[in-house]
Amino acid sequence: MQVLVCATQVPFMRGGLEMMVENLVDALRSAGHDAEVVQVPAAWDRDRVLDAATAWRMLPLDADVVIPVNFPAYFARHPRKVLWLAHQHRAAYDGLGQPWSDLGTDDASLEVHRQLVDWDNRALGECLSRFTISGVVAERMRTYNGLDAVPLYQPPPLADRIKPRPGGVGTHVLCPTRLEANKRPGLFLDAIASMRTPVDAVLAGRGSLADDLAASAERLGIR
Image (cartoon, rainbow, N blue to C red):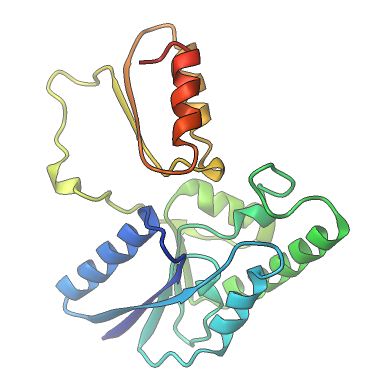
């Protein structure tokens, strides 16, 4: 079967979504399918966020099945569109009006928000099946769009190397993430600083907040 995995590309950025797409394509090929990735660049600022959604709508996708994984790739037209959603455009939903969002509470932002919700309802509603990478993502879709989806958890990269710790749960906490405002890595530092029992904690990643987070860790007494 010919399968196209549809994903948004953010030039010069690589993170968990890109790894998810690569793992999915590898798994499809291992299962005997002919799988390829289709990517379209997108911009997240308010004035251009709808452009890529329109572009996806116009693309001819010749395959047996398409699997979109994020906004706005799920705007692709196909009779057998099976969603495996990592995220919608959260800036228009639970991020509306947040400091890290390009959408505030002004009239122009609220109009883009209204359009995005309406477009999402249509594009997500036409999927043959809907899956998400977590229960939280499914709950957001149910809350904001009135659509149900089944959580289908993905194995993390290098999952085959993760072994149970002898003796049960240990005292080491690892948080791998991009160090950007929308990921809210500062909450991890606040939580570690508030714990009554000392733990070995590692916040691992790259991003524009690296220096600020290092300063926060020092201020909170986290080493």
